[in-house]
Image 1 (cartoon, rainbow, N blue to C red):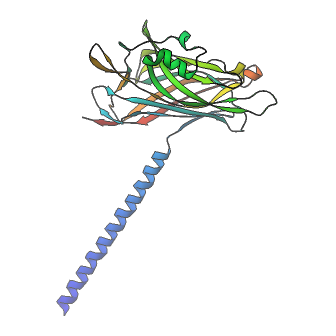
Image 2: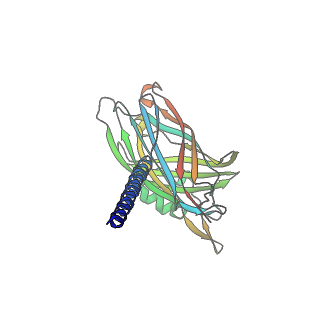
Image 3: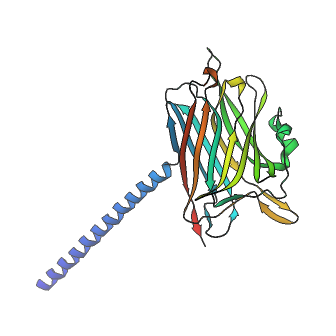
Length: 282
């Protein structure tokens, strides 16, 4: 009887230990799940100055990329602009951003469009004229606010066209078309050049024109950049990247917002760094 009692006691201890281990595993699993949820939810990089709020996000697809050689990718960029007091935001007019050196742009043999071909064109007309040079698309929202009138929100389809490479600079044209207050095209010019600045290898300067006589402000944009094409029998990709250490960096040197309606009284300049994950392979 004593032996049986000993064996039962020993078995009970084993069950107790197993239960403790199971509880520990479940607790760790819950902790990692919560941590993962927090990381997944923290997608936006939020920059603030005064009452102006800029939420920025982006990344590449696919996320799993070679460590040492470049592979085709699509780049996703999005942003939201608002104010903490709910008022009409100052107009987004210019941005200078340095991008990770582990990304590159290729334009060899890619058809070219000029800014003059896009001015005053609807989205359909712009694609008809410059469709072969299209390298991206998306959507945006613009708010028009005239004095003593309720602001009007306008949805704006976005198409991105290659403007070619010359003198070490690549040009992009981001075209959108609005119908309020009058039908008009809004063409943002983006210039890109190579730099050698530590982690950063590309500098972009984006210039947004005055919208609706200064009464229009961009509220949001969501754009995908990327294109596969063939030149002289060779398959090429507009954007290529590699993942050397599990992350991509973008440094917003300056994002300039102009208060057109109040002679610059509400001008704002923002800066900050965006870090997004990638997965090294190979």
